[in-house]
Amino acid sequence: MEWINLAYLVSAILFILGLKGLGSPRSAPRGNLLGAVGMLIAIVATLLDKGVMSYTWIFAGIIVGSAIGVVMAKRVQMTQMPEMVAIFNGFGGAASLVVALSTYSIVSGGNTTWAIALVLSALIGAVTLTGSVVAWAKLQGYADKAMTVPNQGLWRAGLVLAVLILAVLFVRNPHGGGFYLFALSVVALGLGILLVIAIGGADMPVVIALLNSYSGLAAAATGFVLNNYGLIISGALVGASGIILSQIMCKAMNRSLGAVLFGGAMVSEDQMTSIPGKEFYEGKVKSCGAEEVAMLLENAQKVIFAPGYGLAVAQAQHVTQELATVLEKQGIDVQFAIHPVAGRMPGHMNVLLAEAEVPYDKLVEMDNINPEFSQTDVTIVLGANDVTNPAARDDPSSPIYGMPILEVDKSRTVIVIKRSLSPGFAGIPNQLFINDNTLMLFGDAKAVLQDLTRAVNEL
Image (cartoon, rainbow, N blue to C red):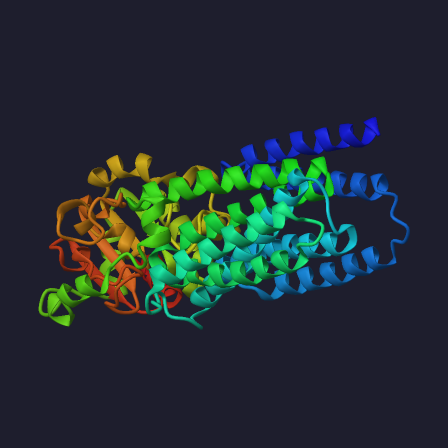
């Protein structure tokens, strides 16, 4: 029907406008709303187009799914958003896998194009499902950041070869190849585990973006299986945007996509043995208290906050904005430096600070904020580690050498608020902590900032 295709066209336009809106913190809420409206139109059009005999199970699924969504939205903290996104990617892959298998059980055969689409839907869906579960387990702390399996490369190659053989056998005989499709799905589930299990925690932002792309590609393949243009368009957009975002994340970490997928952890076991331990900091760290920092801030004209995952863990975004407001009332220029991979997923810091109602024009991306550090009186680093490590710029022997960083060390004074001297996801010490212009303010970020705000108000 022509009006169905017109509805899908409108949905596609809304999806594209929504993705464009997500490119900026200021327009992100509108972009999210446009995408949601587009998906609603596509769903309604699909239900009316396919002549559904009974809506009972559909409405039941909507009610149950909505209830689960509301509970998760209420209970999941902003610090757990990366884990939530990871598991949602898994749900998308699972949906594609289930649809592929169930469709074959009903249709039991089709032309070559249909068979290829079915294989891709099952394959990508299965890899996305188990890969996302592993990523979620890593982020939750249920699994090591980087794990290796004996002869891991051979296992991967063997599973890929098995997938190719099973795919060819099924495509050549889609009418009687149900066993091949089922076996391919099982093998793909194992492949998904092996593809993600060896990837280190520092690369999780890339993995989440890539798995999001996988879920979109699986949906697009499912659209060909079901002959649904809306699903093809939406899946293709998600797949393409996920790949682009993955490349952006890789550039921000000076890592190739291949190195992330097949290189394992950012720091190898051999490199770990040569990395200095506690002696790196011994006798070189200068600590301070809230009163000392308050005195520095009293005489400052420009202050930059550099947030990291420590801010998220402490849920300190609101008290950070409170301190920023106090400083601005005293005539101090305040900005927030945003690194592309600060936190555990793309845009993590933007979302946290937006929740605290930090003005969008105060959030400055890395490339734009770096030239300003040399004119900054005080930079306050909130739990950021690897993304502020000068070794990435100055030390060719460092495992993270070449990774773009927030050049906070160029500020006149750097205050690092952190619980301890523990390393970041890369697992290496931070040169910033022992620099002459750095002072360490140890403690939970939220509690420390509350003390600091009181100290500033008392001056």
